[in-house]
Image (cartoon, rainbow over all chains, first blue to last red; front, side, top):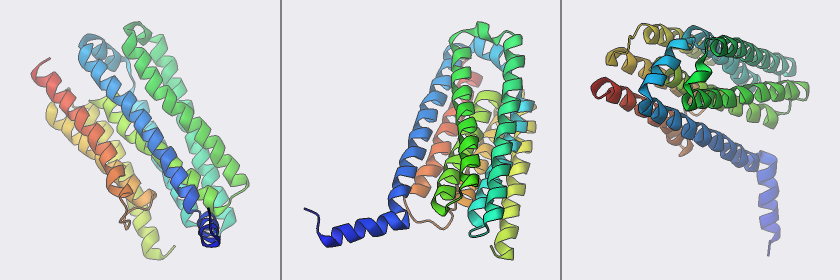
Length: 186
Length: 91
């Protein structure tokens, strides 16, 4: 049975955002584990099907992916800046909107890249192409959804929401930084 | 944010951008050789480390979260290196 002290502790934790923080990190880790499993599957498939892996690599566009890395790094920087701006609400809003716009620019470049890759016929490499579109498409969905949340938080910025979306955005950024060399460069 | 913190924050961004462009250039010119591939993977780890420590603000943290987060890119990039070694020597 909960005592008054337990209740006071729970209220203090809720007010300090400690409870939210635990949920946030559970969410971050679920994302990292899901992407980790997908990336391991992609690496195994490139070992199993070396011929198709070479064909896929030859038809990817690492230049566009590098541009996307720059866009996502700048976006993550703006999100981190929003957290550091503290009580400067107009500055927080500006940083979050910029972070979201850079996220949408990432999505636009990725969609253009998909268009070129589909026209070049990489769909013909079977399971490996499916995995490529699954891994990068799942990440792209996270970027688009994250950008929408960034705009939403920019509209109503509270300290806990800014920290939460910035941390999630950094996790999405981190996934791309690891995915980029694994899928495009090695 | 203090002036020193702001300068350090901008330096982190400059490092990240340099590593992003440098990694792409080295990767594009690697020609499947192991040494440049290893360099690309080390640069990718460095980028991830900057994001975790500076953007997520875990540099001063003593919690288990910090080493756990740093282990995630380290593990996946090590697997990528192992795959490249296997392809170079076996396949």
